[in-house]
Image (cartoon, rainbow, N blue to C red; front, side, top):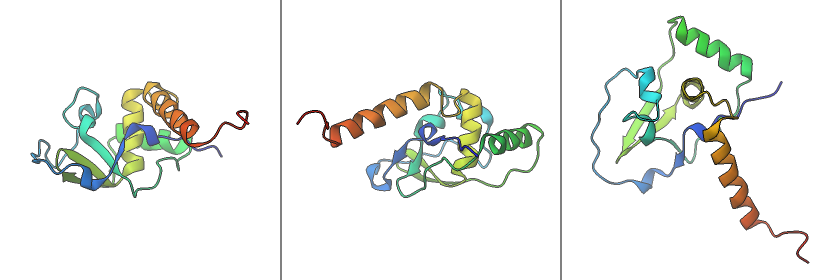
Amino acid sequence: MAKVNLDALIPREDFAVNEGNSTSQFGQTLQIRDLEKGSFFYPVLRKPDFQRETADWAPERIASFIESYIDGDLIPAIILWQAGSNIFVIDGGHRLSALIAWVHDDYGDGDISRVFSSRRFRMIKKILPNKHEN
């Protein structure tokens, strides 16, 4: 069964990058509007470099999870950690990415994912020699 790659929806960053002042602007509950581009939360959300890629769920699992959210079912806690101005997802990356995919209508094929894939492709091309150059 094909998996959906949602890795582009939460940028990766090293914990040590941001050592600035940290001011928490969110409470114990995350609202769906906090995952929109213009919110205070989404732009500072990061995955630590050591986290696995967010590409392990099939489309049916993502749809089922979103339906559970819409139906008001209990969603397991997502563990976040604030370091400097960034908020890191310690646990719950797939769950949070599925909700972000729903909010942004990007299930690995939208604007955010295309830009991410394009950057990744350009980076790989710079690293690997062109086999036709010899």
